[in-house]
Length: 159
Image (cartoon, rainbow, N blue to C red; front, side, top):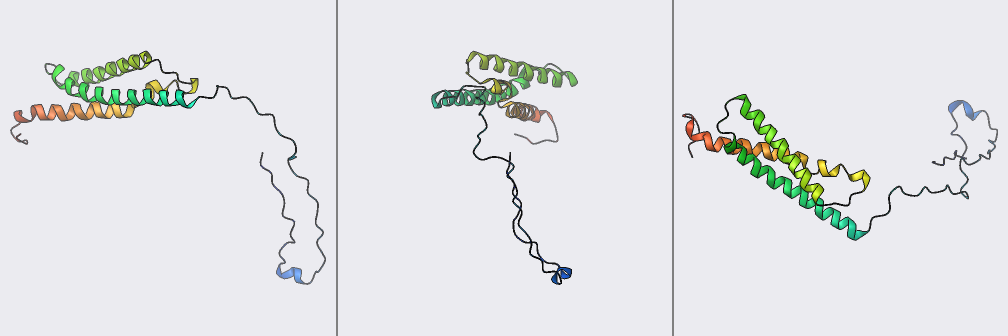
């Protein structure tokens, strides 16, 4: 808890207070907390992590990040060619389903890495690089589809 003490200085005189000149007595104000008492510290819920374990965890999370980035680029490009025969709206939904399936594969790979994460960081296996994965997948899928099919359009950029 925070400790607050009241000011012990005299109040600033106002325009009407100049006629009154009575000394202000200082009051002794008790402290809100006793400084001599220490609160019992609660033991941490998880054991402290050593530097070697932390660096190993960070290395594996970094490896997972780059795995997802690489798989997003590869899967986004592959989606252009895998779903070539599907037309219209079904192509979009098939590609999004493919993106989700590849992401679940990366979760299985991450669990196979046997990362020693504390219970508070268990969700990092799923959330690590999820935004990068989704946007890179969609970006590479759109760019590769545009480049492959740009020659078919009469009013487009010729490559």
